[in-house]
Length: 279
Image (tube, rainbow, N blue to C red; front, side, top):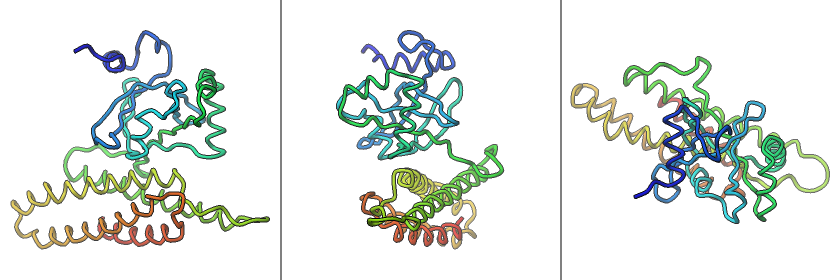
């Protein structure tokens, strides 16, 4: 079965340290791997990118097609993505820009790559501008992972940093509403894609981490160290408590435009206490 055009580009990219020929030759190209919104399978696509003020931007243009590309729907459902640029590969969180920020970033993109203005002119949909945010590992920077304990510390550090970020964004949103002045009502309650994407990435990573511990790590520890069974049972109970709060947060995110920020932040505070005690 002949390879698709995208697959040929992907293989050439990986074989040549990010360099490719053909229509992409000499351009800024990355590989984006997303998780299927419905299938749950991993999908990789080559995409042009633009750097702006330290930000890494991609545009869901689909060459001006009437519908968003599949990879955009995927990252809305599963914000955690994998990025490959040159010989470097890393995990990122995909956050579509909104409102005035999207307009500003799109203007910057068009200055660098004018073809996107043509794509926008071909369609009535607003072309999404997506920021690929590289998560922070904490003040000490990323750790070298040599064993299971190092991996647990890395994951726990990432979870703590994401929780701090989400709380800071929720606080900023509430502060903006409180500062509203002038005629009319304050902005309609809503959490925004910035908070939504980070919260979804946090929840998915938390679920994956706890599922792995419950299914594999804890049984192995209990088998080799029976005296730890009581402690492991307590950790499983904590997992169930955290999972319940996580599901409540996801329920709030299901209708992002109508979610009550005050209720959402109250849930974040509650979850922070539970999770911090657990970690």
